[in-house]
Image 1 (cartoon, rainbow, N blue to C red):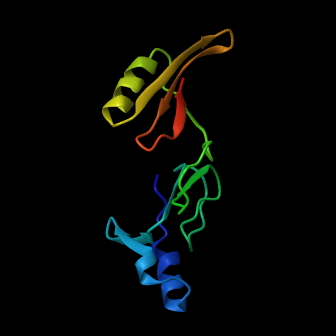
Image 2: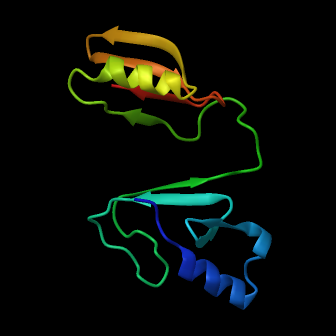
Length: 122
C-alpha cells in the first residue's frame, strides 16, 4: 500500500523545512513531489510520519539522467505459469522485451520500462 505521509509533510511545511512546491496533493492528502513509498499492509509503520517500518520500497526522482547501469534492479515474480501473461500486460503498459533468457539456472524475460530501466519477469 502507498504510504500516507500527510502528517509528516504538514509538519515539515509548518517548520519551514519543506517548500510548498516540493509537495503534491495525492488522494486529497499532501505528499512529497519527488518521492513515494509503498509498504506491506501487514507490517508496522510510524503513525506520526506514515513511514513503513517493515517491508518497504521507496521511489525517489533524481535530477541526473541514467548513464549506464540501473541504480536498482527489480525482479517481478509473476507466479507459476503466469510469466507470458505478465510480460504481455507490461508490454501493454509501455515496457519492451529486451531478451528471453533460458539457462540451467532458470528462465526469465529481461524487459525495460519506457525510460530504459531494465527489470526481469520470472
